[in-house]
Length: 173
Image (cartoon, rainbow, N blue to C red):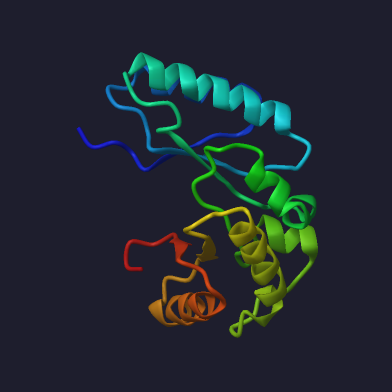
């Protein structure tokens, strides 16, 4: 059985449901993706950390084996990226997640373009926070186009900024 790369977790109640679901699985996920994190949800992240520790213990895994991937999808989370990344030693990846008509675009108000220049400051700011917090594999994304050309341009631009990877949405990517 191959472990899932991640489970998506939303808020504390969903975290509890996901934790119970992970506990029943024959092998838990490698990471939990936490969408729309905020800098004020330390208690929720501590609760999730505790639940993941219980899952690890129940599966004989070392402490910290299941990682957290926080998604910065609000203006406060982008501004407080370093606080989010420092909130748990389980944070595996961090970065600026952007997409046309996505949560960040709606929260900040930028208009997606083929040049992606409207996201350069956001992605750079979050990348600096990730590096300052010791995150070795900062990731960005998410280009939702099925056409591989804009995806390639976005990935190359992000790599030029210093990102190590990107989230993609389509199998052709």
